[in-house]
Length: 358
Image (cartoon, rainbow, N blue to C red; front, side, top):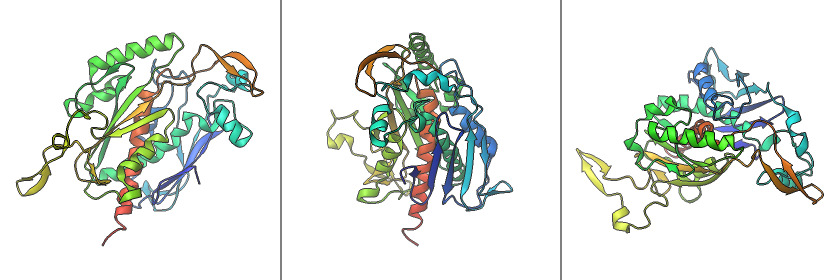
């Protein structure tokens, strides 16, 4: 139950970081969608480890294998099963963690909840499980493309280095031209330098990923408990290392009054339009046809390659130092994950909306 995401469009995923593989079953996916497997693989390549000097050195091809639900390159409407095999895990790197609780990890909570935990790579708590999200999200993107809905995420802050302008000020074509996935080349270079410096120290750094959804029709979202922004927030907060979510102007404009913040309607050549979009494309929990934009905050990775204090499973004070291959900053690889979860949410709510009226 709690390994399933979605309402009509549902992803149920499985697998651990150092297990045989990561996979899933996508149910409720529309029939008749051309499945571009090259596109799916490119999305996985944006997420995979070892893609640049800034990411973990773990090398995984992350080649997806579809098992069902696709016939002659087209979705059939039946469950789409898939698997991505793990090929390069170094489980022995984690042997020193078997009897200790790592600071800010899931070790302590998993141990107490289940009475057992997989210390090798973190098991199910590892961000490697996001492989399944990216596979499912890339398929959702293909379906949304037919509806002219486009989703773009990018790194907007690393440490204290951040983009100061509205998303409209940036050229999204620049995002994939640098390792950080930032649309501002100058800021990207600064972020790159900071991450590389932090990595050399054996430490980690956090920041934010921003996301823009264009082309969303009016009417996605439900009253009260099915609000679209709440669903997007839920989707983002399920991603490893996420600590915060804000949409629209969020926390930025508390200095303004209601009159200054209100999005005023006007007649734009016979069409009702808005002069501003402070609401972030959602009003009353329902999409209003404007761009949806939000920001996701990621904490610094909890695994630092430095000596730290902790306790053993018996509660004895001890010192330990993590080993293995880890990201010093998750943001570059988190960009496609944020897009994937946004795509799954928007497509799910589009399918829900089709059931609300004739």
